[in-house]
Length: 84
Length: 464
Image (tube, rainbow over all chains, first blue to last red; front, side, top):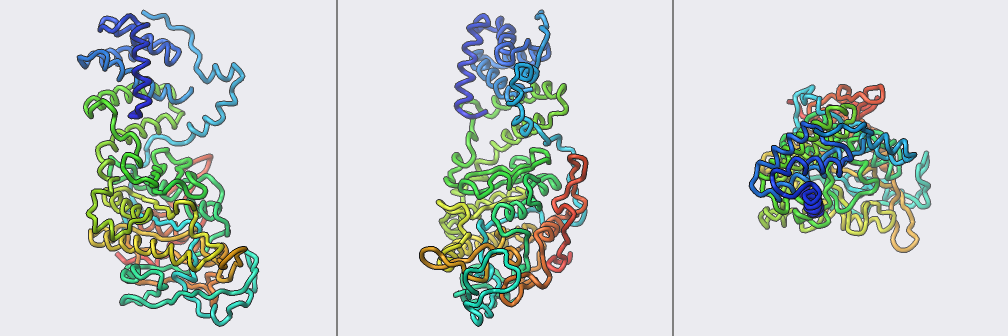
């Protein structure tokens, strides 16, 4: 997860998700999360996952940074690393 | 409210799209490995807590190192008789090296080991080792996993599985080698044991910490920020795992990330040999093997259960394979190996660690007591598996002991024979494990490191 390549990919992904998910304000957090699941895993997010995501995104002040970190987690998760 | 679309897993999609082929390789990734369910406990009182195995890749010549054979001089040039596994193109070749007894115990070593000679009373030389095949690959796999057929769990993985780790911030099994030895990762595979017991392979070609252990630091996040990120990742992975309990690889990956996160706190310090005083670094020698032995001590000291150090050189992944120019090459190899090995033993002893750290020095087999003519230049010695020497020290092994013997010419182990299985059984015993009870159920049966073989060599074990 510390590889600079992963960090750069997460940044690019976060920008795209914000652009496609209604901007980068907290009011758009939920659509950011749902868009992320559709784009990365090709499935809608479950409610529990949305909850965990919202909690994470709102724990810090720097929305853009939180979103980058969140995108990186989704890229490093087992659902991404392993094919079902 | 989001409409839940009828879902199709990526596996189903791939299969239905006629691309199932790509999934075959994936099965290997996902197979075996599972939850850490084994509660570490020993079967006996343990004498050793950890192991450092110094592997002399290619197979050192026993008659030039630890097993003097004066008869080779008397019968020099005579072709050996009896069953030969490697055709004799030339006759017996005496060792040019002098042998002398050392220490109070009188353990006999060749002059190639002036430093180890000073540790003679800590050494246990087994002169009666034997293995099944005189070829590198099966010999290596046998010495590592107790079976010639790949891939079975390696000794380090079994110990990690049986005993766990003493330090949760470091892996229990670390492999140190400049690039890779012959055979490679199979030698430290956990095979069907849970993936957490696989050896962490560290390329020691460049021993700066950031080169050996990549990406120890996150480029932007601090520890607290990373902890939050890691907790989210783990929560999501656990949700994901809930509906996929049969995929042991998923659990292994979660464990691997936990391990990586934990390592960030301690690995930078543990792997950094530049923190050692110069005199200590000089004592080990400024060579790859010397530095690796020093790193092995740092890791053992911090509770890593099993450290495997491979003796490779820059352009040779089995330098002890001296088919040509045996004598000069042994002179050079032994000088380096002797210094580093002796330094390791002294250093462990000085720190009070030798008593419960078992150090093993061995190759996959020995070399023929008879000559192998070289196409150009000086002759060498061929592979030889029916008699060779292995060195043990510390970890509850009797010091100052020479155990077993080969025949007059060093051809076959004849007295107190010790097969690789017996060595494995003894190593487990020293660590408090019964090789017949340390099992793992896989593919319908209970597997052991020693399969259906192995006898503990109690004669070399110190009484408690």
